[in-house]
Length: 292
View 1 (tube, rainbow, N blue to C red):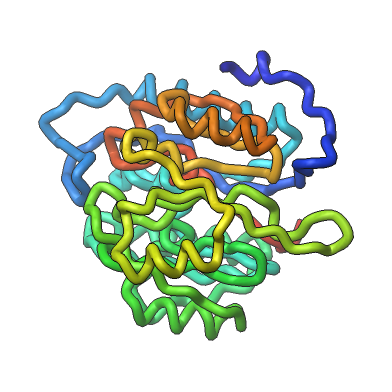
View 2 (spheres, rainbow, N blue to C red; view 1 turned 60 degrees about the horizontal axis):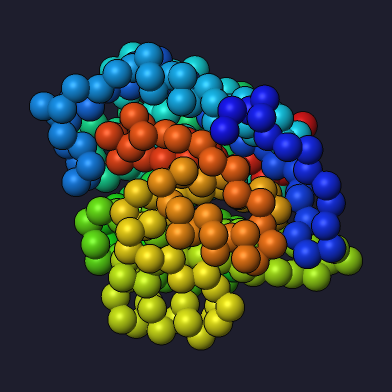
């Protein structure tokens, strides 16, 4: 579905759309020249122009839905910078910077922190290895934090100290789902009408160890549990404004589950960027609060 084909959004009693502000980065330099996750195969050709077209559709979709999108300039030699979600974690105008595990991505951390400073955010430089909103998801007043492949467990303590919020640690066990945002989608807004918190999520149980699965079952008994087939096409690497959920068109089972719950799936194909191990959420960093 192109941005022009998105139907008008009518408010419903069930699901309330909330305004979002995002940070994105054009994939001008996108390629796969190294491998730091199972999706990346440097011998497999990539098409930068196709990646740009698909990214533009996602950008246009956000604007068509009434959201704001800020841009950070891409840097030659940093092909993964398009995955802005990994560049930090922002709540109430404070930005906790990223400290990447792999040397290929390390220079992205300072680049994102420079952008945050230049745009009026209070920046907290990290001590511990973390990959931003890739492994930190805000659900209500709680931060779900992933570990196992990228962000360290010590970063969970650090992010809790930075924002003064409860942190729930979850351990990822499948290398295909190396960031938390590949295995969990936050569906409802942080706050609903009248200040009532809502905390609906969707997740892939098989991506987590048994204790983490137990935590998710207990905390989110009404969560959507997606199939392995939908998880494997990065169906959960999605963005939601509380009503509209931007997902991969290949996650057909998840699409049906969302419709059953009263959400409005909007299909955007980022198949080329998946060659680098990223999808819709990876390309989308939420800016909560700030100077504008």
